[in-house]
Image 1 (spheres, rainbow, N blue to C red):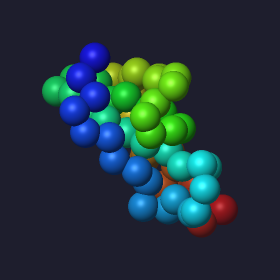
Image 2: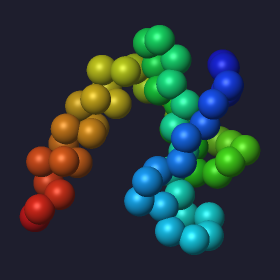
Image 3: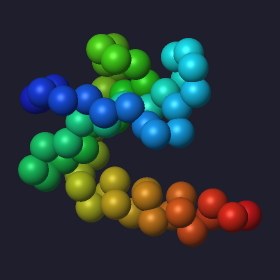
Image 4: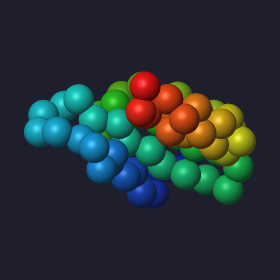
Length: 60
């Protein structure tokens, strides 16, 4: 797995409660720390579906 570049969520507050992602051509790696200790890897399509779901529920 390439971890060439981890990006931190723009909604991150001070401290360790942040989401970090690293993308590859067909996958997205998700971690809660930088450097990552545990990494969840999902397809780009699954990550896109997650984002759409979160955005649709943002105002509720």
